[in-house]
Length: 73
Image (cartoon, rainbow, N blue to C red; front, top):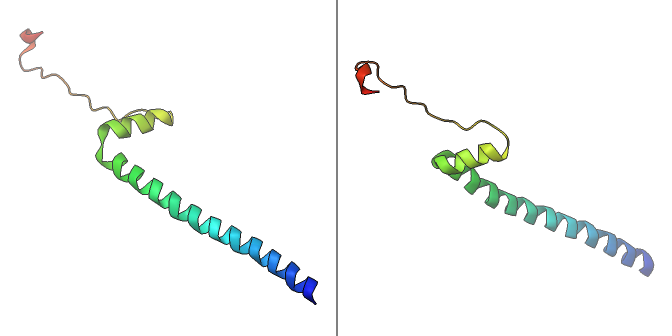
């Protein structure tokens, strides 16, 4: 009887520990991802670096020259 109780307690303790680690991991990952999303949406430099990190083309805004006065070359 005592052995079954101790074995059951140890097994339950392992599951409780894994549940706690999972909960803390989820909490930590949310606190890492949310600032990244905010910075990605608000900072052009941060957005460009993240896009280059993942191998995507940066969003470059190209300004066309006006052809109204071609002598300004």
